[in-house]
Amino acid sequence: MERLLGVIRKVWGFETLRPLQREAMEAALGGRDSLVVLPTGGGKSLCYQAPALLSDRLTVVVSPLIALMKDQVDGLRRRGIPGAFLNSSQGPAERGRVEEGIARGEYKLVFVSPERFSSPAFDRALSPGRVGSFAIDEAHSISHWGHDFRPDYRALGRLKREFPRASVHAFTATATERTREDIIEQLGLADPVVLVGDFFRPNLRYRVLRRRDAIEDVLAEVRRRPGQPGIVYAIRRNDVEGLARGLKGSGIRAAPYHAGMEDRERTRTQDRFARGEIEVVVATVAFGMGIDRADIRFVLHAAMPRSIEHYQQETGRDGKAADCVLYYSGQDYGVWKSILENQETGDLENKLRLLSQMYRFTTGSRCRHRALVEYFGQRWKGAGCGACDVCTEAREAMAGSGEIARAILTGVVKTGQRYGAAYLAEVLSGEATPRVLGRGGDRGPVFGMLAPRPKRAVLGWIEQLVDQGALRPEGEYGVLRLTERGSRVLRSVEGAALYEVGVDRRNSRTPRRRPR
Image (tube, one colour):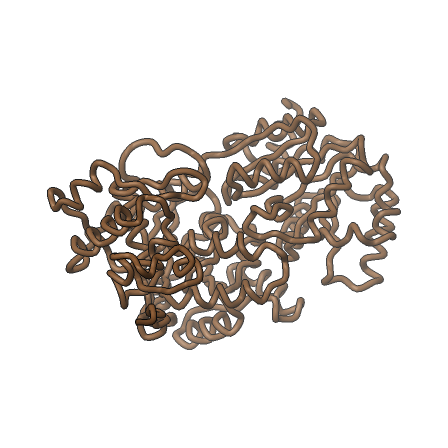
């Protein structure tokens, strides 16, 4: 380890290591399998790059992101480290040259996309005796419980069988306990070292705002930070193009980045941003996950991400202070739902569950940092964070919020405290869904009590009451129970403040009323 620290000082110029980096490198040096969960900017890449320099065998890095591969290989080459990548952006001749170089032992590290493992030529190049370790980035993609399941990752379970002398190291920025367990099982990791970093990042200042006009909202935030580099996320390619045009038309050095662009265009945008020729990149998720620029001082979301995991991964780069502003509206949920339903990855139910959790995060009244920390299974310590809109900005409760709170609590009691939030929201908003009809909820006294308010608004208010300790979800299905505080609110002994939920009523579905 002392020798490795000397190499890190010489090659990278780092005098100290970040939390858990030493333990991750010790596992690599000792040939132990490992699972490393470090938030974005936590220094995962150094954990597999540095040990590779002391090995006489090849380190293969698996990544689904073309931008990340190019960025990391460029960085290695600048430091005099022999590295290469293999992905779909290369022609057959270039891929052939790299595969021949692998077979000759020319590289310390090779970055590959997961689908490369279906190539016979690649298999031949990777003789079992040549590979010392595999580093699997974005390892959550192997799990159906993860936020970005990719079928190609399933093939990686063969690595432990076909390369028994090689250690396997799984890296991700975002994995709940359930996802971590699934990663270990799917990859067949043998007695792995499991390292999970702290999800509380007080250097990040979180703000969540209702969107009015995407271009005007984003432009106002960018102008508050003249000359500072930043990333703006949007959902669709057309949104990316429109925002980039709007920023450029207002004098901001901006450029788009999305999968619909040619490889050459994307590479040019990436290089110009790295050189400081572009201030702002407007992108879909792939760019932000792949870029390795340390001085990004703000991350804006022009619309809601599709999961809390994506949001956690897309915010924060280098451990320094940065602003993370998320604009949302009720339309975002419907847009993502439509996109996810058209994908064919076999995990739609899980993705819709993650989308609902993200929506509740945007509309909730709990400290943003606390919500993220507890979502990933860690205990929150202390009171407010002092670094989010909930904790630092005075917010005005809705008129009539006490009446709405009592209606929700009445609904919990009248339905016997036997159901979760989704079912209760359907009953209270008057949605005659099959499960409501099947359970007779449409004949109960609280059916439609909060109509015509839509289900998603009611879900947001239920979540706020959970945040405020008036309701407590129990068990695997989150059955709602009244707490002592909830009883006091129901009796009007104590008040409850609810806040506007971002539903665009012009586009919300008309509740299906029970036939009379």
